[in-house]
Amino acid sequence: MVSLGDIVAALPLYSSVVGEDWLRANKEWAERFLALRLPWYAQGEGDLGILRRHVDLDRLVTCYRSILRDQRIQQEALHEVHGAAFLAKLATAVELHVPRDQSSGRNFDVRANIGEHVLNAEVKTRRDEFPFNLPVKEEVDGIPISGGKRATLDPHDAAELGIRDSRPKEPNEIATPESTVIRQRLVAALGQLPPEGLNIVLFGHLMGDRRDVEEALGGTQVVEVRKDPATRRPEMEWVRLPTGAFGDPAFRALSGVLWYRLYRIGDVLGRAYWLGLNGDAQVRFPETLAALFTEAMNREERIIEVDGEDPMEPYE
Image 1 (tube, rainbow, N blue to C red):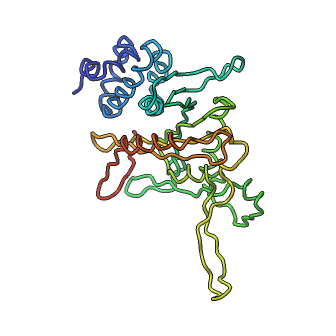
Image 2 (cartoon, one colour):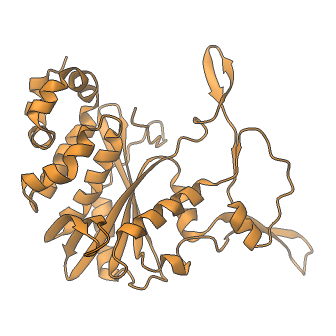
Image 3 (cartoon, rainbow, N blue to C red):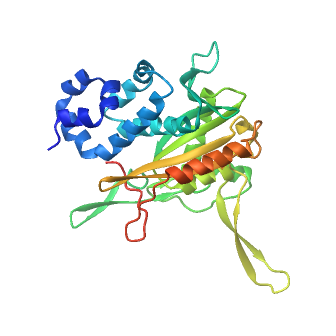
């Protein structure tokens, strides 16, 4: 059994940020919950160490103590720290929780000087629990089975595009696609970020399919069926509808999105990354900076496969 003393010895910076007195007051939780998830907290310890090179301990405490103490959002908190640390590894200077302006009272999570560029970043996380958040349909050998359907095209987008859905609605059918939920997260992030400058969202995807992020940014992907005029045979092609954030004038202040995920298999923590850039942004993501990001993603990524599959195991 891992004791509280073992935890403090293994995670000295994390312990300083959350407070050793608090850990002692929550000894049962730490030894029961945290000790079973040490790979996650070892990653968090390393990420806090990267940020500590740029800011003092008091700043880490101010920015992260409350969320790292919140036992309900531990994975969200560790993803937030990891996103900031990813930028900090590339940066010569980092500021945390930077005021957006003088009057709104809002702030954004990170400002990083990387080369000659100043990058503003806001962290958003998402845990997509579909279909596990739907009512249980049946039990098989004592195992609850839940399921349902979810739209891939937002009904408001469908109406604007003149696409009609005449199907009768089924029980446990969700009309709002995941890509719409993600776009709403991006809207919230833009409300935190400055209206001008090189702006990016660090999107920590706790659970869910990265393809939903790609559809949120680039548009819903559908199969288009055409008839070849020469052969009269139908031809099918995957195309994206114009429903994505990139290309929408409302998102011109957003230069890009860095998607990332931390996931555990056994005692090892995997990391995965993807960078989406907005070609219609008012400030385009510089090619030199994109190259630095790509190099860092390739260096940091740790894909763990089991029997040829990458399961992206949930946190719990």
